[in-house]
Length: 551
Ligand code: GLN
Image (tube, rainbow, N blue to C red; front, top):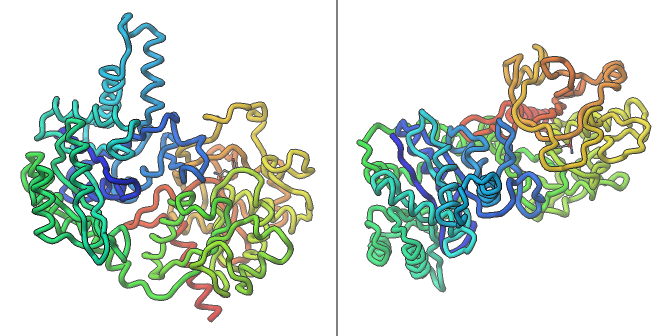
């Protein structure tokens, strides 16, 4: 089966196109199809790797080390689509390869143009995601119809639909039904948005209308009439007050997958959404609250730590608790005593109105990050968690901070640091590998993608994964410095995960502590609502249990 679904958006951005595309993917998987998800991003950057998290949110890393758009994280959480560099296409990549071919003379002297050369390259890249086992490729086109920069992608979609035929390639269009005045829902923006699609030569087959509440039959009929879309193919994505993970079941109740399969000429088949139903049951059964202090640098922006927050939320399903994120700007914790007061609950967090209140946190997490700002605040937060026997989870930079804190406060190396933050430190306990010292170019110089960590029984790492050999993804330049292995071990720090050649330390743990673990890799990228990442699950369970003990 070689089927394609193009998901575009209209009216405005941030309507949840990524979630809608992923939820449809989950439903088709429920019907036994092998789904592949592809994101087309209209920006000119080659990838998201060099973009500032403030502007673009998190960089999602795939097994093969591609630094991609955070939408791929949605795909990973909702579907089982394999994700690699092939699943993330940017305008920059398309032009890059067309220009390379042009320089190599591969266009045989022809004038190189947006149509057909750019659009052909887009189509070639979409087809590259279609591996031998794939049944359906869902292609999400970033941006909003009408944007200048999305035009080549929509034109490629139009050509695709023309070449493969309506029965093999569908257009799904997501729009907004705004509410004006007293609960009056307006269809006009949707009508205009579909007109804009039609001007591009694409007649949407399915509409997903983002609306405050479920649209009634009269509304759907009206939308259908004005847009040339069948009434039973007009769906509502209403605002959910539970969780975005309810959306696959919400679409299922409206028979979205049945309609899509019918339009694609696929015979009706059994649907199994058991995992999603079980997940929702766990969601509903959660009792009690666990407060997790996130101490980071990009705290104001939810998207900067998207996968970390989602993974904590998934862990809450397993631990049977709601998670309250206490977002704390690390630079705020740099002055003496502030971390103790804040974590201990005698000072409210100023950064999140939701969390303003005077309560102790039940767990502390330092996520990944780059650059010096806020590091000493993170060290103070880690120090508080270690002394107060409060579960701590350090991811990448968060593991490096465990090592720095231990060196400063247990080994009494007062100026211990990572050479990323202090080149002149007498104790660079985290540093570049010798062979990296001369690297000057920031694009593509990191340790990126999946690699193996070896642990042993008895460690928290083993307890989480129930495995000796663990595969997780990396994105960093600096490493635990092997020159300090002996000193760290001698003073009691547990080194519990290594690369298979024992060359690099991948995990450290605190002794005599309920749960203090730092990993050099990023387990958040593989967490799903239906299967929380093991370390997140154990961290949240430890936080829950410590809270219970205290009470
Ligand atoms: N800045 C650190 C490094 O490059 C940590 C990176 C991260 O947390 N992803 O090693």
